[in-house]
Image (cartoon, rainbow, N blue to C red; front, side, top):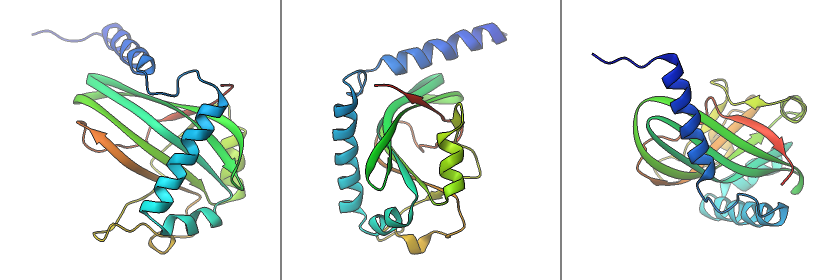
Length: 186
């Protein structure tokens, strides 16, 4: 019986994450204008498809828009993408999102997500951390059977609300837990 060593696992995880980051997801190094244009399209798509999210955005202190996350894996996997943090619909910082995963998985997926920071404290913690990780305490908003996502479906006490949308691909269930966000200069 063959067993993977820690070294094999770490090498595999590193290689998978590097390959995912190398995937041409259209945002790689084209600068802030490209990221901002993709954020605008992502925002317009979300508000057009789920009109109730515009009300949620009005209540948010800031929103991190990640227009395209590419996730791939074969036992060991990873995800990578770039986006922008907007306060009052103005870009204030750019971020990358990276995630390493392991377990039974095979395939690839692309999706968008947005993190709505509902309190000043949550936004401050995100902006001034060396690298912020999404955890299990984050509230996920999901669409109901009618295809609606609205502020009424969410509790006002959640400091960070995550919306994952626009999934396309073969991996089932995009999750943000364990995703690390790091400020970048595009």
